[in-house]
Picture: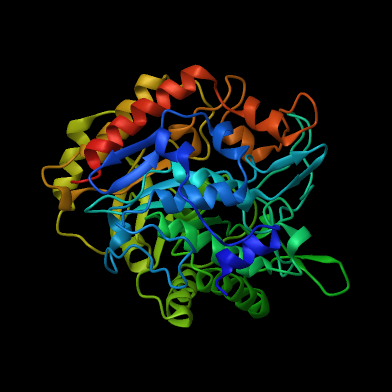
Length: 437
């Protein structure tokens, strides 16, 4: 049995699928590309997982409706160098998890529910969603806290499984955490998306869980810790993830440390080369995309490191600047700098018009579609958040915005209301024109 069907059985559903009428009423079409838009995220997040799967199947580019989810799903194929022109969209899967009182859980299931509203990959380049959290966070994993109490995603535990915020452990006996990741990746690939996740490399932001229940500080000088880091990431890649966003990558090997804001030692340049080489070699996947945060001011350094792209180099508000750099890199298919609509440190306050302009420049700043540079967006760039929070705040804290303790109330109040719906429609208008480039 494939893992999507295992997930349905584990949730008490049958595996027979039907056309989803709600999806057909909200569908946006560009050639064969389909997704839902002009929506509020809560309209998707309050649906069942089975409804989400039926929605994804209803949006299929194929001409035949699958009344059962197919056994073999291939990732959208854009060749080994797909990462140099992809649109990376980070989804904070913890923020959209189920907030049940003080508990936070099932962020992966929530992300499955949101998939129909993510535009699928275009004719000439891939769209890739990056999950903010995979591993347990060091403090308060599985719980939400007040809006002012730190509960950072940037501190992780290795050798301790996967986050209670993300995996549905209530159904673990029927479908394992890794099988849940495989089901998620199969659904994303079916919808025409690439997938990846964020990781951290600052030693003091990583703990190693030991069999006796204690946590050790991570040490890049410890060969066992290095091997653990590699093996944990290999397991995730083998479950279907194809990209890793590497926090603080600019500073690998002690580079530009006066601007380093992470905590603890970083891997040496040679260690990171070895890590990225091993991830490709051990998974047998030559098409992996490794994106480095702010790794863009010394192109050869990051290219030789093994990265595919880096962020925060190109001025995103200026169309002509984006087009200029796309011309500069038109023949480079190993490493390219990218255009940032916003990043995980975004503290909000940017007008909708500015965000839309940056998305426009990211999607159209080139002479030929084959010259397109990669772009980097956050969940908020597609689905605006409520006025009194922002992307970075939700990375550093894990509040519930529920007014009655229910997850439905949290989902309703996390995002902007009708102005957010109108903004989402305008984003869809931009993607519609880009899908068949």
